[in-house]
Length: 276
Image 1 (tube, helix red, strand yellow):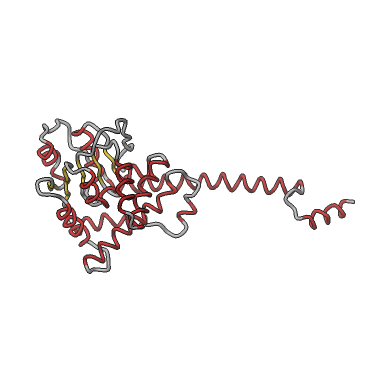
Image 2: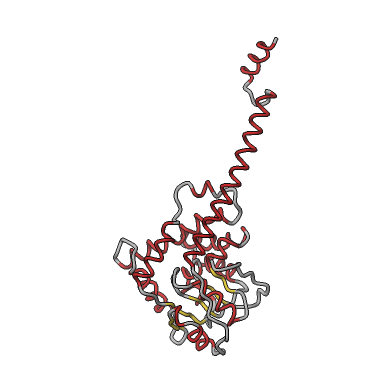
């Protein structure tokens, strides 16, 4: 959610790096940094799911659907399609499928990101507040791309519920980031996993990729502020669309009622008799 979503132009480019940090560990900054170092498009989940065209967003929704249906073959096929042409990925939905990404791209490097659990959970509070209320699917229904946001949130919730179940702690909390990092470590083959904190800047990434450190400052994106601004704009734009729909509908009803087109036959007969 740190900028304009990347769009691959060469489907033959392959995934080189998984930015495996959980949401709210600097995933936008990581995405921008990887785009610079790898000279290619990076799939940052939030930017893609809220900024790409409807057809692309549906590719990741299909991944979640196949996961929930237990259809592994179809899920892998859908992941391959959703990541085609990208050189890197960060944030959900991609980090929900790290073992599968490693299976599809066996030479990929994995950069895990550590953060103080309590500070991380406090930051996650803003994201948790965005969790979809019952009316949100109906509210966003007229909006291409954004209409899939509730399904995206449900996919993330599924990961959180599973994590709480596996950890033996039924209440999501700061412990989930450690659980996530353990799962990343377990899923990644020896020699392919690296660790950093986002405050470390360029050095760990450049060492992993064996490239020079750029002279420019490491990108710093406030994910929380970017998300809040994006959600605010999304809600205002959708409210505007609904206002137009309501005005048009009211106009049609009013004109139809005046002409008698929309009146029931018995009411129209009464109106006709009254005017004679």
